Picture 1: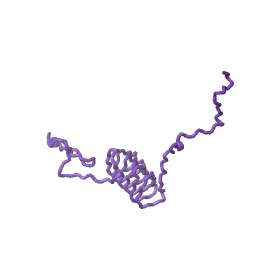
Picture 2: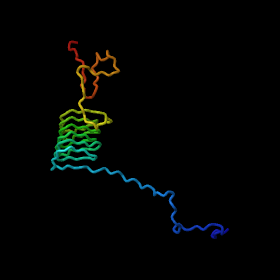
Picture 3: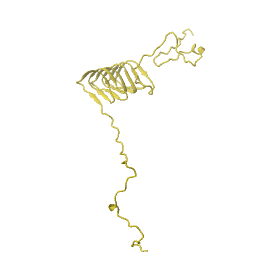
Picture 4: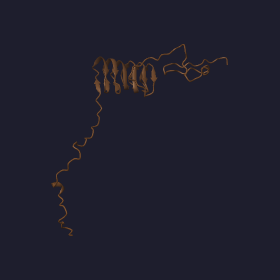
Length: 197
């Protein structure tokens, strides 16, 4: 057996360049990598626009003009720019206010009121940031971030006739303690202190 000689019973090996391409194992080509999901661009309402409308959408919105109506953005961000003047009820994932907003705000994640921002209305949100110099006139209702905010907010029903006590608490336990609120908006009733003792 020679090192450089080929034996007669050995098959000849063709160079890779001369070989035909191997047939794929399946008739389908391999899947192409999925393109990254691009975030849709924000809609921008400029300072020169004055709009009376109900806005609903699936992308972020920046308002720098005048808007009267309502805004429902679901899982997106509403930004009221420094020149924005909005008179609307808002439902969004996040609301950033640098201008003027008059109306109720419901956000599933957070509300930011920047130092140049002014909000007149009630805010329902799990997290809020109010910068020094910002203006807020209204009520803030803190809520857990997991609560579904797709439905409109309704005022909590309270009954003055019967105090709200937990169902598991015994009736005698409520006589010496303040009532436990049934909802975050119900005021807590504290016992009066006797000034003679």
